[in-house]
Amino acid sequence: MAIFQNLQEEDIEWRAPWLLSDEILYRCGDFDWVPLLRIWGAVGCATLLVLRQYSSMQFVPVTQGLAECEFSYRGDGYRKRVHEMVSAWSHTRRMKRLAVGLMTTPEYSEWWVKRINDNVSGPSQENSQSIEEHFACCPF
Image 1 (cartoon, rainbow, N blue to C red):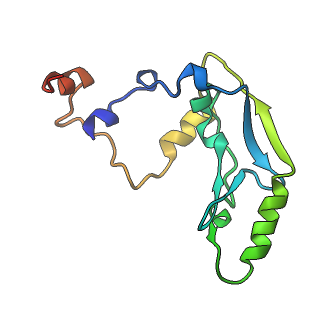
Image 2 (tube, rainbow, N blue to C red):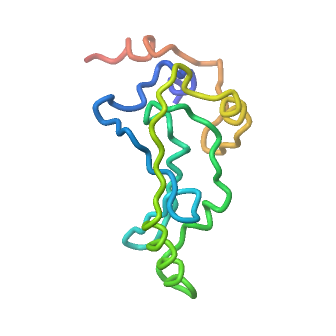
């Protein structure tokens, strides 16, 4: 885990260049994200959260309401929600990939620093190793 905490942005290759599409599907209907219907329920996919994987500039996307997009196919009103999502797919919006020098906007960098992520503890300088030191002990 320590090796990941010391990674810099330039240490990561986000995606193979030959897999990049010219357009990014980012919105369906009135949803600010892409609703995906799965076998047991639905979930929202915010492709604007991962623009760097498309070699595009990353900015802070709209995610309000994204959590409410996830539901299972049971209970009251799920059929109406499924119908809304299916209808939304007839009105998709795509954007051209914007390849630029800097991969993040200043606003995104500020948001990223302030974000709350309970899954990953903050970087620790004690017992930290560079990637080279970490892999030096591993025979190939």
